[in-house]
Amino acid sequence: MFFNYLVISCFYFIFSLFLFTSLFLVFVWFFIISSLPLFTSLSGAYMTPKERHLFLRRQSI
Image (cartoon, rainbow, N blue to C red; front, top):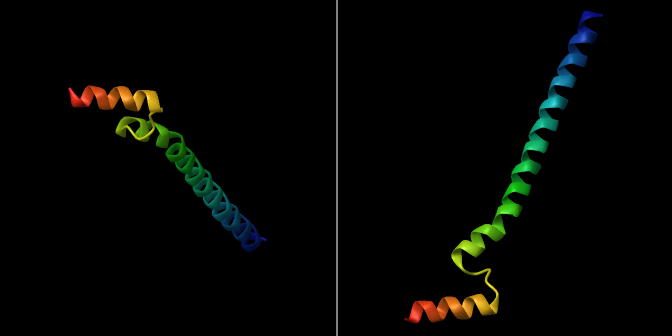
């Protein structure tokens, strides 16, 4: 009876650990995806053509 309880608790612990890590990975992946446009806009690659034209004209002065 005690051994059965031990196996169930161990299985539950492993399952919860796996669930937690998978949720954490999904959260990190979502954070990276959501922050990608911000990084590209900071680098200047995510501009609209009008913004890029103004930016290049400002750089040439």
